[in-house]
Length: 140
Image 1 (cartoon, rainbow, N blue to C red):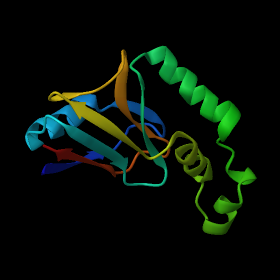
Image 2 (image 1 turned 90 degrees about the vertical axis):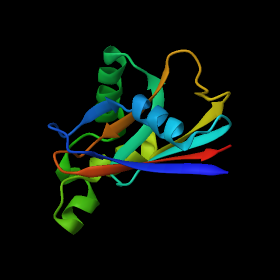
Image 3 (image 1 turned 135 degrees about the horizontal axis):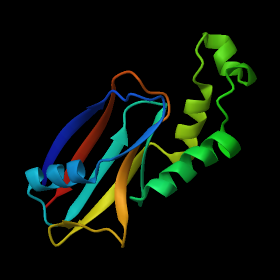
Image 4 (image 1 turned 45 degrees about the vertical axis):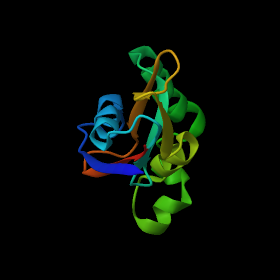
């Protein structure tokens, strides 16, 4: 079995951003030289996410609005985590928990095995500081 690991570091300009990292996932797969296997993509922070969805800016706005309006509004005074730690990012933790922190992408015949329109995204929910993602390809 072959494997290859890369790390990405993001330092977003905004508190919340969605970034397409599919090309980075493919670079890791190619560097591992695998034709059959999988690629694990995982956020290394508890206030960020990795997910698979459509590369469409209107959807990204919908996701951000859904997280703000339905899942975890950015209202620091409403969360016990914020009062107990002095931080203001409890909403980011809840957003990460809801969206998820990792995905596994299958590799078949030397290609990332996606359905139509699928791409891999990094979701930053509490940015403006360095955060990392690990990408690990494994297979034959």
